[in-house]
Length: 184
Image (tube, rainbow, N blue to C red):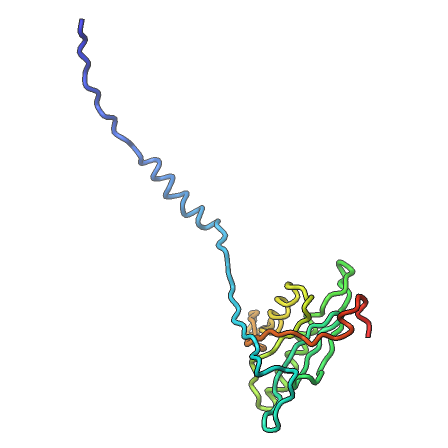
């Protein structure tokens, strides 16, 4: 015997509850998402023609500001090659290691900026010179320190500009940096 089958009716899809869930879930997930933040620093590499080891010509004024990162200290030179301030490493109270003193560096650069402004010079560039074996993190921290400092303006903390035009270069290799102890 043949049985006759009834044609099946298509069931209607009810997605209302699913759509309600998506309407709530998507904004919540977007608000809790951490967006990656990428910062780009514009750097200038010194030209071969403007090599700091060569003395300036008679009609050229030596007006370069340098930060030299050595094994045991940082040196601020102004004009180029003339040490203005030496910042020896300090002992970190948490780890007991000897680290570079970036707080004092920031204060010293603020003083240099004030001194230059009092002479009528609006200097925005600085050359950071480091030894070949200098830590990457040290160079990045030095670049952050020389670019700006935290200042309070109208009861809010802002980044005040120091020397935003950062150039990188190689420091002259000294005998002290070649030896393990680094003593002079």
